[in-house]
Length: 80
Image (cartoon, rainbow, N blue to C red; front, side):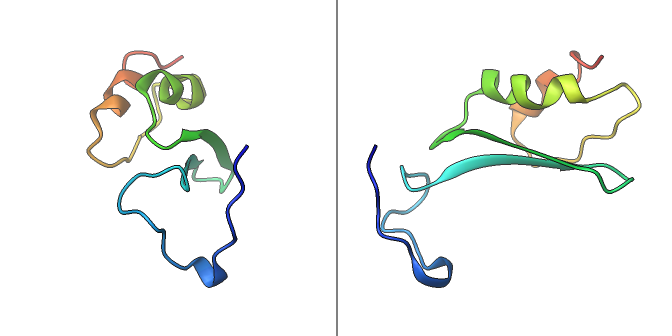
């Protein structure tokens, strides 16, 4: 495992865009203020990891507010 020197106060990454310095964390919050978070992966997240992380947590009555990434559309048909 590679270790990098910590950046002070957030700082900026040495590379633009996605890099090995970044971790993708999925965070969801409901109206009762319960928060769910999960590390989905390093660098670029694949659809299968997203489905595994969030789709099982959704019910048909949930409203999913996301960005425009099409992978979230796969959760629409997999709600329990």
